[in-house]
Length: 286
Image 1: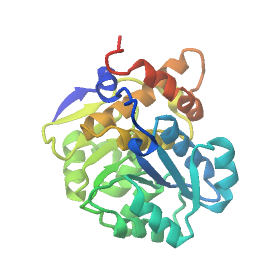
Image 2: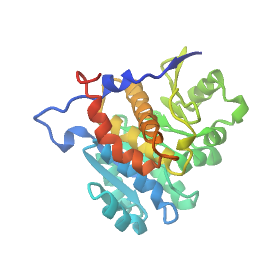
Image 3: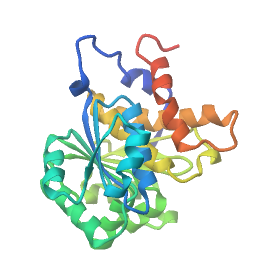
Image 4: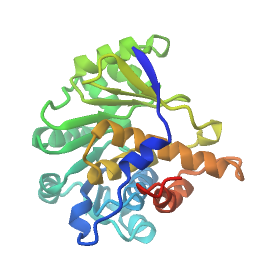
């Protein structure tokens, strides 16, 4: 497969000036099924990135222990207890984009959550699978739903668990072959040179050439998953380009912050999303 470097201009192609006659329902209903009692921070970082990217209505479904922390950190988001099956099912049905996995624990409860989503997801929706949910697919040999648009966002270790490919075997041809066997639409394989694959593009994959070791800190992937969710809820013209733009923006902001910081914290990246997006509005790109 040929490599195509993801470029900054993808941002100006994707980020659009908002219509004057619009409201929050025009910018996506995002449901994040994330976090646990032990890993609530992952859920909050993903939610913050989705909200700050401009998503219209964002709901976190998580352990009740995370309610106060979320609402004090990201009051723009809504919260439901994911143990409330009726409310969770209603939220699944109403959402345009569903992200599951960031900060979940590998447990019978999480497995039931994952199966619930897989059984109720609809063709018109977008499903983003991250973190523990990816590992559980491999561990429990779960089939990824065929009907919705699906996006997998594993790091190399998670991809090994779901694909069976060791890290040394993870080359573009093998990655695409395994992705095709899993029947998912997009693969964001996170590493020091993140790669993005599309099931419809058999000859080419995208690679990120921006970023660095200043991003090697907990929560970076959770923030990226939330950012992708927010973008896919708003920008619908080209899913592949939208994913590429979200991935590029994440590392672009990290790169800017690294000029004055030893590490670029995920929460600080999220803080900068609205400001940096503003500079890339189409027709204002310099």
